[in-house]
Length: 177
Image 1 (tube, rainbow, N blue to C red):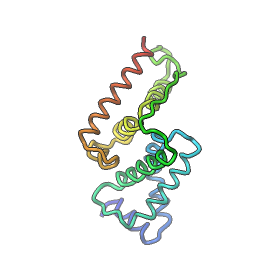
Image 2: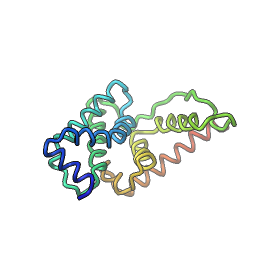
Image 3: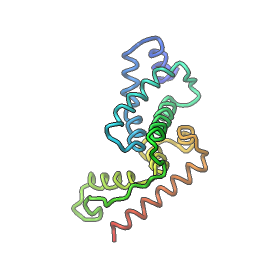
């Protein structure tokens, strides 16, 4: 029995400490998923809580065909998209606006500033690209797992990842000039 199977079993038997452990183990993933899709800060915390409520309610249906983290990420992704649909926010919106951050190529720019710069650039990407790049590079999911989470075919995942990287390069090039 894997650690996830044991954790799920303990939660299903009513062990609330196990559920707290499950939340702690996967909260970063859920925050990333929600945060990359939902822009309204005031909605994010509530949506993250809603995701874990759904996880708890649907845990008996988890069949261990995928990793627990993939299953939870799928719930978070779909919950965030449903939130956007309810609010009638376009999924392809590309927020415009100047980034106010230090020049990333300056010699005295700290690594934290460069990381913050990259995160700001990622935030300007369309939701689908932002989601795929976050899952791949920050959550270390493979193409198949990303496809399972998002419901996209693997080829689409690869294409979106490629396009996201291209857009990031183009946006970064503007600031290097």
